[in-house]
Length: 319
Ligand SMILES: [Fe+2]
Ligand SMILES: [Fe+2]
Image (cartoon, rainbow, N blue to C red; front, side, top):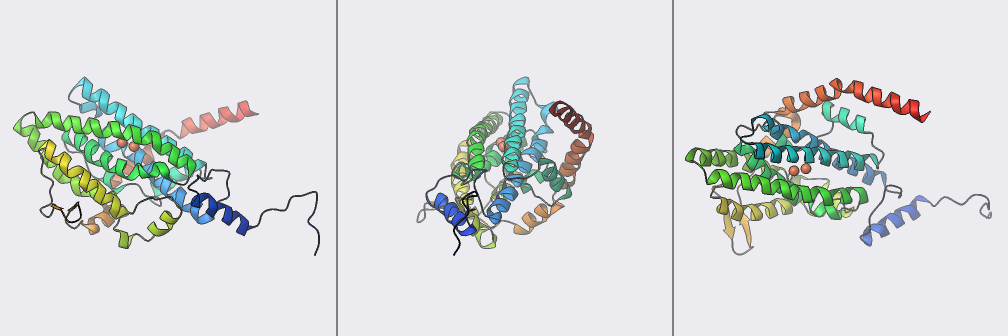
């Protein structure tokens, strides 16, 4: 047996690194960018964080469509602030993905080519101003349900980004609910607009939590790694339980005849989701998929000169 070399420390072997990683997770401490991590953990996180970042950026479009048609200066200021927040969320998340070694331009290309996904919810159109309120209430509400547990995600930069994101999401939900409350106190026509928007957005909002647990092959590993803290079905149930009393206060009907309170479990039972629709929309065949991606592609191509100029400037001054 030869003695270890004195001039070079022995690299810790894979097993020791894996043990250290496991111990960090077991102690509920965070994994940081410089720490060793298994390749599967890194890849899963890049996929999840990129998908989340893409959703924030694409999510600016359905509501952005109403910025020029907001019914008052106050509504326009509120909506503008909200849409800008979503851009900021995208930026934090792309930065978090970069700490894992991902390249932002590459992530954008993958979004446009369709090899990385974004939330199916943003492939539905916004038909009236009530949709802005319902998106705030239900879509941002579902995002909060999903994201609050991610503040305890095992990956440090992702968990820390979520803390600020969640504070802003809470403003988004309230502005939506306040808008709907105002419309519900208005005319019959306005109340009908709110009900119509609720009818169209309720089921797609429930799909935001992803496929049912028995059809979600990555959930177990993601939970073991502390990337996810609850299953899709647990979060969906939490969202339904949270939304039912809010719908009652608002005075709208949720479009599910099977929705009822189950005293035995303390939870609401609800009807079957249309998983074929979910799969179709995720695969690119929703009402607005093509429009969303075409705009993103145009933004990338039309602004390529800015990236080129900024890169040339940085190289010149770095030299
Ligand atoms: Fe957001
Ligand atoms: Fe939001």
